Length: 127
Image (cartoon, rainbow, N blue to C red):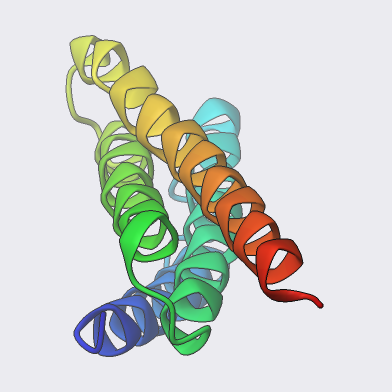
């Protein structure tokens, strides 16, 4: 769980850096579709880096930490394939992108299940 925090922070940093790079250094160099891919990759990367960071900072292990790692891994795959296609990688990379999306979705499910389990334990302890 402790390693989730620096991993999420690093991915958040990279998402901001890639977003700035795309907005400035790649301005005019990407196609319309490439620009959309870049922006989507940055949005999902940064959003899920923040969510994974929150999971790590929660101090809970188990499903919450697993959810954070699933989000982070999914976002790396999702954003990575979109960045690659925006820079000219073959279109078949797009077939890999949904694997990352499934990872992100699974992360949200795990965090939700972890929250339900925590809420159930808290109710059991209430006098």
